[in-house]
Length: 222
Image (cartoon, rainbow, N blue to C red; front, side):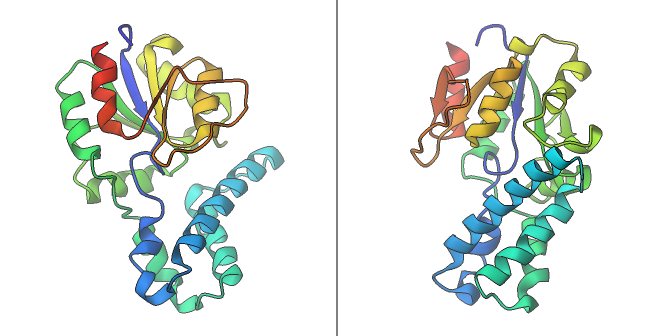
């Protein structure tokens, strides 16, 4: 970690809890809220990959809405909740340690950025609503290249902006496919394994995994 010049974070699932929108509606949705939230997220990701392969790009907000439509039908959730769920998705809650960890990192000499599937406007609203907008140097969106992660052109974005080597980037994601995407590209990828999951077999194994972002502070001291 000694040669790291930029620390780049995935947004959804890494900095922000993608299930928090549905969780805030659990009194209305009932016990199935968590299953519904996971189905929504999985469908959302599936649509990003399929659209990239088909070269039928739609921005992340439209994909989020399309995947919500399918999920609400699958879980028999009243359509009147759609607007509420979408509005809550715009202001997802960060994980508990995110704010403090970013403040510590901000005092050091790293470039700090988000590299996300989210649209520029979504990312701006997300960090602003959680009072994190002054902690990042850049918010990189796949909309700059018109294709979703794990396409290598997405991981190119910070390299081109900062004019640094691939191995000078520490990339953090809770999504194993994203960790593999960044790692195979050349980043020093770190897996944020919050739920003790099993890593995918995608030709990459991260040198480091952490349970939450606060453990990153100890890693960068090594």
